[in-house]
Length: 242
Length: 388
Image (cartoon, rainbow over all chains, first blue to last red; front, side, top):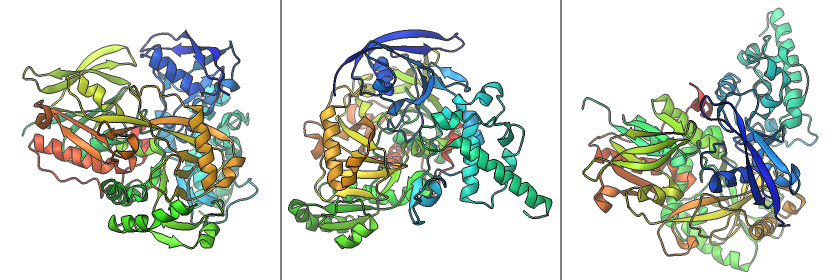
């Protein structure tokens, strides 16, 4: 198990108004450590000026999303072994489609502001926290659970529409609106929030969001389902019902 | 008083964020700095257990009482990030059964509500638990999301006027010429600038790193950084926390979180807590211990493994024997250095009371009489921390 690999971490650097550049850090590292461990080693032993977001180190908080060799990854649960070879490289960059604050840190305030409009809660009843397309749904309503979405932003980073349309709400927010409506079908404010050219209708069904989601949210499916909910709401409104 | 007193809090973990929240509610200005982001140190890497206090009710009653009191308060003010499904303490052998009378007595004396459940009934309630369990007690345990708990305190503080500067690393303390602390020298790691910030008082809320900050003023505090491992597996096999009915030991708590279960932990000492590697033998031991509690863990895959450094108060004992309670050091009383307070020790579950006691000390030093209000005010949504 505990062999040691020579791996070069190539890390995107950027401070203040500087242009982005890349810096290489050769590490001798156990490939069963995670990419986040490698980044933390670079900070601890090589360069204390490196900034990166992280908190829980086990995929419950969503802080450590980054691009690893060009692909969105939650770095705390991505083993080095899964993204490179002995003698290989691990290229780490900040998420796309978010403003860069410094090095690997991005500003997620816009996503959080939009999530605030979504009538979405982090804790729900057990049944409501699983995808309805999952086969065996727990029936007990009395248990609570933290929902799947950890607001890591990987889906927004991978979204081709978010890349070209900065005003697009993005998969995480639309999925949260769908999920919030699933919790409580009475809520219509958030449906109206999503029912715009920059909301549910802007999605091109690329499904990249669902591919990179590390947490079973399946945002693309939720956006498709949200469209049905919006259409249903519009029809009801047409006939004078709310 | 014409101007509001201003305090700098070093450390944006649970304690630092809860302190900022408490300070603002008592009319004191707060600026929180951290070399990382919110909860980048021990706080983020906590197990995520909202303690009932049952784990400590035999050997560490002060901590147990703090836990149950704060458990009830956090369920009220921070419901937004807590799964509250209760927990079990289960006995799996004769040694565990021998511990049961002490556990019952301890829980009663620490006013922790426990309920003895017949083994068959307990297995119906939580079918994945070890079918050979000999006794089971239901306790008011829960699970929380670490980052969002810290963010909720920070969000409320920010809304009331607290300032947060993340990636601001303290690199020295400013003294006023009479030997008192009056500010912090800071390295802004986002722009690579060095700046100074002045304040009426500085609070060191850096937990396991508290000694590094007091060193800037040549002071020593008795802290023993005591890391422990946590391992997460990729299936939610239980809905309640499952504790081993035994004195605190390695791998004695398995808890559900989102779609995972997480086992913890170990206890050892290190000098430097900036990087603590995950040791393979500890990962293996955690898996074995988790399988004892919930056998189906053997059919899961490991999802993550990480180390967190507890800040235990005390020196020269083994980590397991050090109390889990907290301590607020006023460096005026301790070392004759004014304007400087250190808070450390404690548990995530007790962060609010740690903040209350610290701000009580700060108020006394600043001649302010204001009652703590944090136990009655539900925290605003965590995501408002990010609103501009």
